[in-house]
Length: 398
Image 1 (tube, rainbow, N blue to C red):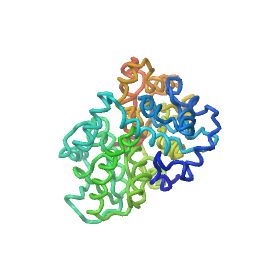
Image 2: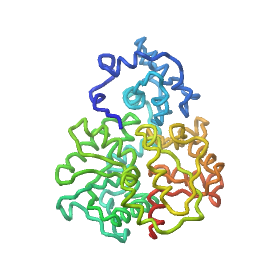
Image 3: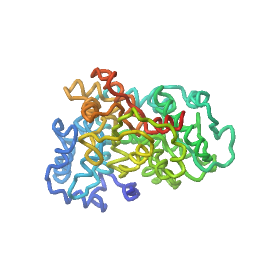
Image 4: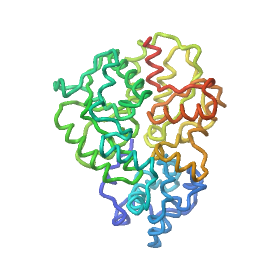
C-alpha cells in the first residue's frame, strides 16, 4: 500500500517545487492516459494535455471548462503511466478543485448529493439521527460507542450506503454477523459517524471533505480503540491516505482484505455449500488499481464450498470501472445527456458473457449501480449482485 503523506501539502501553486511535481515534468506525452481512460475519447483535456498546458502556463483553459467532470477517478491512467506520475492521487484532484471553483453550474444530482453530505452527513439526504436504526434489524449484538464507551479493539466504520440504503443495510447486517461469528471485539459510532468525504474530495469539493474529516477526527478523540475496519472502499482511502494529513494514525483495513487476512479464522465457519452459484468478481478500482487487493476477494470466494468462480474478460488491473467513483455516482444523468454509455451497463454485459449468474462486489456503490443496470438491460432474471460478505454469510447459514 502506497503512502500519500508526501502529497499532503501539494497544490497547483507549488506543484513544480515538489518531488511529485518534478515527476509530472517527466511526462513523455505518450497519450496512454487518454487511451486507458473510460471517458478518454470524450475528454477535451485528458491528463497528457493537462500536463502540457501546465508546462505552458495555460492551465486556465482546463479550469474554466467542465471537462474534468468526466474523470471518475478509476486510477487506470495512474496505473498505466510509464513515468509513474501520481495522476489520480495528486494531479487530477488538484485540477478538479480549481475546476469546481469555476463551474458555472454543478449538475443537479451531484449538487444535491454534496448539499446532503454537508447538511445531513450523508449523500442520500437521510436524517443523521437514523444512521444507527439498521442495528435493530441485525439480529446480533452491535455495540454503539455512545451507549457503551468502554475500549474496543476494532472501530467498525460502517459508512453511508451501508447505514441507509436498503441493499447497503443488508451488507451491513451480513458484516455484523461475520464479525460476531468470528468473536471479534468491535463497536460502531452509530449516529455520530458522518461521511468520510472521499468522493467529495475526488470531485473537487475539498472544502466539504475537510469539514467531514474535522468532524470525524473530533469524534475519534472521544473513544478508545486500536484499529479501524471499514465497509466502504472510498472511506478506506480517505482514512488510510488523507486523514493522516491531519494527524490521524490508526491502522485501517477495508472489510474484504481484512477478512481474507483472517481466512483461517473464517474458513471453519463456512459450512453451507453454494453449489448453484457461478460467481464473477468485479474488481473495485479503489481496492484493486489503487491498493492492489486483487487476490483477497478471490481468496474469500474460493473458500466458499461449492461456489464456482469465473473471470470476466477484463479483470484485476484491467477491470472496467463501474462509473461510480470521483462523483460519477451522481453524474449518470449528466453523462447520458452527453450521449455516453453507462459504464455499469458495459460491465454487466461482460458479467453476463462470462457465464456467471452472480456478480460479487466489495464496494457499496456497485450494488445499486449494477442492480439498476441489470433491470434497465432486462437481465434481472439472468444475473444478480451480491457483496462478498453476503455470500460469506450465506455460506455460514445466515
